[in-house]
Image 1: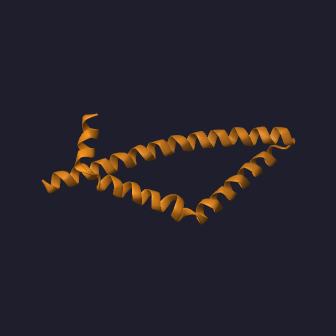
Image 2: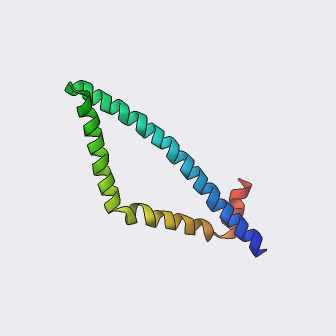
Image 3: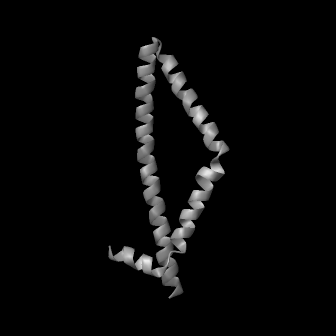
Length: 100
């Protein structure tokens, strides 16, 4: 019985992880194309295409520095909490989700 319970819990965690990765990859495509469009538009507005791309790159550099500085609070803790919540969810909740 414990093996079945462990298999159910691990399959839920893995399926959630796959869903998150899929959405993240699709979101990266949106970000990539949106960034290219924004860089191109800024370049047209400023008169030099490279300025638009440099501004967008600078924005992403600033964003990366902010995320790196707050990675524990923004990434590590929420991911750990989500995994623990999934693993230690009461059986009634898990059974109710299977029915729905």
